[in-house]
Length: 512
Image (cartoon, rainbow, N blue to C red):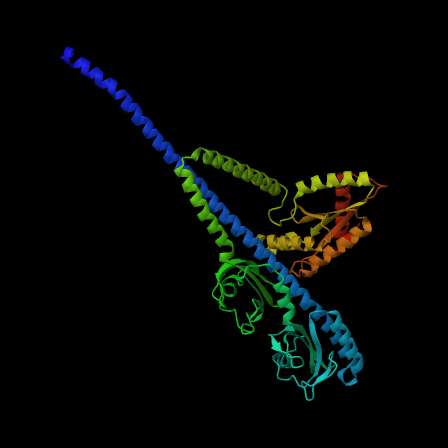
């Protein structure tokens, strides 16, 4: 047995070596090719998803910026008419409609209509709707606007605020206009008439036409009740229709006054990514939308092209280059993510999580830097320290959740009162805040402190445990002059001392 089987076994073993080695090489090659293919698909799949996210983010940023621009434009246009009609109302009511100098008011109206480009006209109607005076050179015979919706509203409502109505056709020029109206009162408070300023719809149409958006994109200005005032693309039949059944008005606006949503438009059925924004000063809503095809279409075409190239490259077994490219891309993405992560960590370390203002660490760093700069440039530097009055009582009465919300709103008021980007507001700790004012002397700091305290006061947050019956704050001011180069510790100490003097003298004030 050994003599007969030994040579054959050895031969079999010898022949098996190349077969096993070849199988192993083939298997390894197959595994390698599958790994290369999987790597290519994985890398390109990740890249495609990333590109989609970037396309979506770019579209999202675009609609947000468009919504902000159109909202600001609408608010500025309405505010100009609001201010003008308010001034005219005071003059008309002061003179009285019975003693009105029609020629003088006509001249004034005409001058204002020439100054404000979007103003279609100014009109004054008496209690019966008759035209008393307008900026136009002539008044149509028997003209009467008592049947207008805005006239009926003011006749039956004592509301003195400006009212923005739905689009109507002008009876003097037949243009499409947006009425902005106010009620006029007699000295006894009874209804005396209506003061009307009208804005051309074409003004908004022209403005919206200047934006470079895709052919199926849309810009909308609507009343808060959903009535469309202006829309791009312009279609006269759409003006005056309602958006109340749209997803934005039904689902999103009740939750947030601004945001982004991808929805199907009720007007034309096009799916768009919308940025929407409700104006804070007036009952208006703007929507800016890009069609889904505008940002998904290019991404899809690019994906198809990439897939074809990838198939050719896989067929030609040129995977090594793609592997290296994929690794490089992954490394770049990882490095970018790390940098972003480090940046976020640094921002979190310097930001107060409750109010979104800077924290004490940021104040320490900025104060030291500003003192050094003030010393080099021989410039003044001021510090305002603020404290919410009777905040412990507020917390005890209303709870910590309400206390946190109070601090957030106070922080917003402080930040909103600052006029320069170089000014820094921080939460110093608890209910204490600090404002750092570069290139500011004691007088300028006092003006800022007054503005901040007024802003806090205007929040009108109820505070029954305070003698003022609402949330107020006190402030202390310290100023560093070239002739008195104080350090950081001295500035903080002086501001704190002045703050306590302000609190001791009755609060809701400042000392410095």
